[in-house]
Length: 131
Image 1 (cartoon, rainbow, N blue to C red):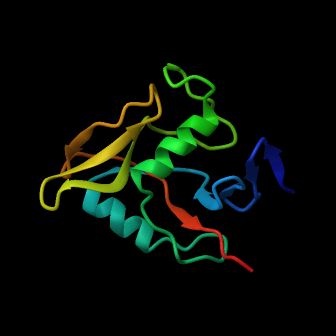
Image 2: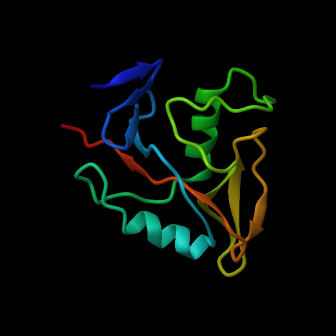
């Protein structure tokens, strides 16, 4: 049974649909892991009958954060409808191809870049198909 929280719908199958953005998110996160592992984990994810998962871009993570918080400077994150283990999540946006990538901090909203060999959390995303 789907439970709706504004535009975020818990599909009851391990996924959350963002009806405003047209995206489906992995409900629980994975990690921590290095950036290359994060890319592969999303690429190899098979969840709710879908296998077209990917690492989200930095704009998608920022919009998800804004959808979960009414204030960009919030210190505590809203937990529902997602399951949270960490605060900092890898994005697909790289600073340089070999050494660093951006992440989004869901405990405050910052978007720093970090070395790719540092372990952070991962949440897969996919675009909803247009039928």
